[in-house]
Image 1 (spheres, rainbow, N blue to C red):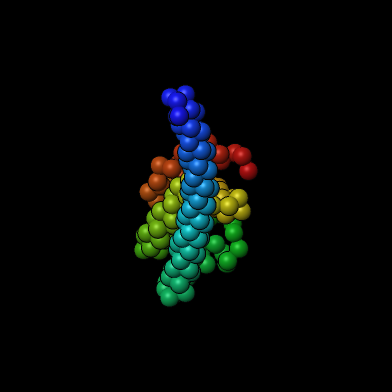
Image 2: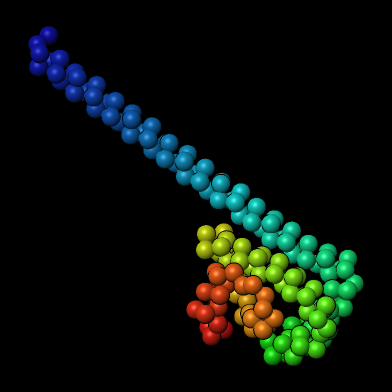
Length: 166
């Protein structure tokens, strides 16, 4: 066997190894993509679970705290959404104690909404969930400002950029 024959065999073996390596890498890329998709689904599930828990806790607080429920009804005039100017007028009619209770509760709400905006930025919230958060911010932001609720910067920035896009 000549050196040329051995070189040809080496080239053939090299080609086979390159092909096997490429097939292996293709399988690994597909596997990695499947893992990424699975992790995204898990993250989405955790996001939805967290959002549901947050809403559930707010509702539970409302039910468990008759004082807050009374304030909520005074503010909203019932359970239906109200335009911002009505919320502000009703807020001004509350006692100082009621305003304090409402303000502390609204701080928790703004933290939850800030978290929702962050999840939207990460692409973890579907369009309907994002739109619900946007609509809520548009409806509540004027009251938050009026009642001096500390508003996270992400919410303020979003409102300044999108308030008129209703």
